[in-house]
Length: 240
Image (cartoon, rainbow, N blue to C red; front, side):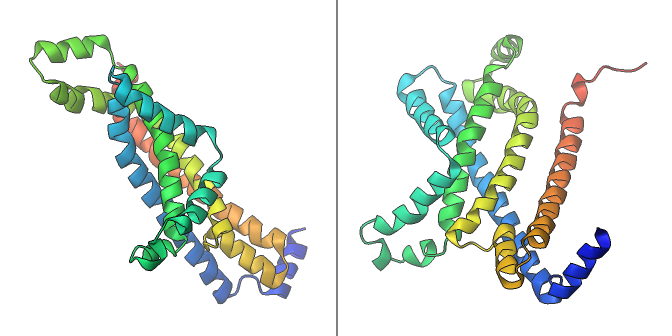
């Protein structure tokens, strides 16, 4: 089986320098898109999670609605709405913004960032809600203000508890980024589609990309396990 596969690959020249460079460019685009989406999403999610944890319906309800909409609709639909919807904004094609948003990378970045921000908001909010009452009372006893207590006590402990769930969200975003190719972004999946259309070798092209995604996933799992081992070390039982 492996010999016949090798012969087929050699016949199609699917692993030439030119095609490998296409895969590399697709890998760089995927990593950039996922990394920027996660960073922007996290920056949005942290204040939203803090505000949603407040007992103020005028603040928490709009945030709940945003989270519900983006968690309750498919990411692909969100990508289509943002990608095609930008062109319907009055005057945008005559403004300097069009030089940015005519590149499909940025509408995809907006869609991915808003989507992961919704999921991350719910993850962090749930972790904030699980903060020990004793920690809150101890912070108040020390005379900490609400902001000091949130910054020094609530958020650090919430981040530690949220880490396992957030690692799953990061891996989900990596896998979900494959849909970026539907709006003409040449990411890993887009590179595989281009190579498939050129060499008519779908099995080889997409299997190779699947292996790259698998390696990236293993790398993320390894990084988050190291982070969990470091940040959650105090929860492990001590050995004498």
